[in-house]
Length: 120
Image (cartoon, rainbow, N blue to C red; front, side):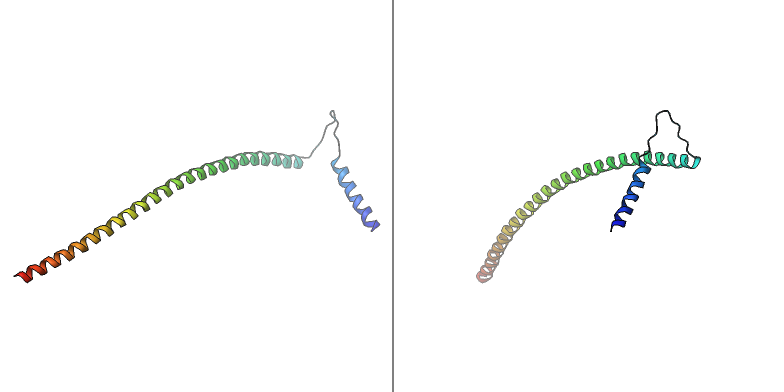
């Protein structure tokens, strides 16, 4: 167990020393052309990702705007639907009243024709 802890500390210390290098303000840093290419690719990719991030946030805002417009449209359509259903109910009631009147009129006409036939 003690060996494992010592090994862990050595690994952590090595990682810390690798990242804690300081460069003095007047010192010159030399990098290879391969390192320069990789660095330039990193910066180019970073710039591309920043621009893509802005575009994605703009797209999210547009989707939110579309959602709000669709909510308003949906509420308008639901009001129109309820008004149409109300009109349909009223028309059904009118049809039932007229159907009842037609039935009564049919009975009266039938009775009248029957009486006319009997009187002849």
